[in-house]
Structure formats: C-alpha cells, structure tokens
Image (cartoon, rainbow, N blue to C red):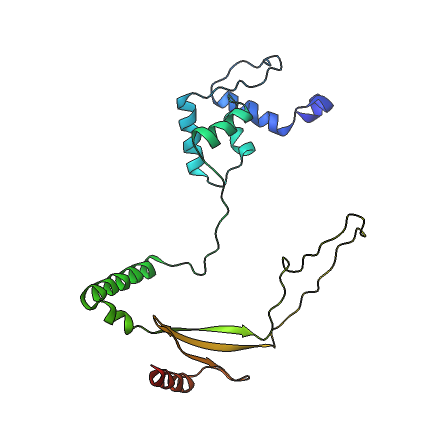
Length: 211
C-alpha cells in the first residue's frame, strides 16, 4: 500500500483504526469529512470500558482509547477518572512475598495469641520476648535531602556535588531482644565472626539471665 499511495499513505495507527471500524461492522469507506470523534459516553460504553480496564490494569489512556474510536480521548479520560473513579497508583515495595501457606500460618498464630491473651491477660504478654538481627553502621551517610544548600540566584549555575561513600567495611551485626517492657539484651557480633549454633546458644543463655 505504501508503494501504491506513496507519501499520501496513511500512518499505521490510522490503518489499525480503520480495521477496527470494519471489524465493528462499518461498510462505508468514505471519510467523515475530517470531523473529530464525538464525546459520547453511554452507560453501555462506560460498562465496556470498565471491563477492558479490569482485563488490563496496566493500560494507558492513549492505548485503551484506540479500542473505542467512537469516543474522544478527552471524554475517555473523563469516564475513566470521574465516572468509573479509577486512579493510577504505583506498586508498593514489600519486604517479602508471602504465599497462601505463610498467610494461613500467620493467621493461625494470631488467633492463638488472641486466645491466650483472652485467657491469661497481661501475664501472657509479659512472657513474650522477640529478637532480630540488623546491620549497624559506624557512620550514617548524609542523605540527599540533608545535603541541600541555599543558593543565591546570582550564584554559579553548577550544582554542589556529593560523592557516594561505601560503608561495607564499617558495620557490625547487632542482635537485639525486646519485650513489652523494653530491651533486655543487645549484643554486637565481633568482626570476622559469624553466628553459629554454639554462639547463638550462649546468646540465649545470656538473654535468659537478663530476663
């Protein structure tokens, strides 16, 4: 087709639009006189838009509006944002992806805790001690927000620079235990050592004495 029509050949997006119109039942090959799409939005059309959105949550307004040539892009955006009340949200980072089995186990543990608390009250909470390990840095790197400076409007145009520093060799492992009353034990692992069964057993013995 591009060889036959040359420079007057329509764009690929326009060809795809005509194909969709013919698939929808159009038989007239004449142009409508350059008229723009009318901003129509019937209840049936809004329902079809809603179904298309539910089928692909990663849609774009431009991409999805091409599936509905009978409605203008501005009206399409109005239907999505106002009538259907959709809004675009970024994915939230979570530390772990829990499986259904993990969720069931956590739900069971939570119900057990509630039953114990209902039976024993605060005495049950006094018996709970939990712990975790974390890396503790000797120095805390200044954040980008903390490095902001006030610059005069007549100051040089170049921005202040900040070099990224690595503290991988300036950190140690800390083991922290706590209960509802406070922190009974904090231990720092000596450098060039690792947590083993024997060392953790001694830690638990010291935790018992602290409790």
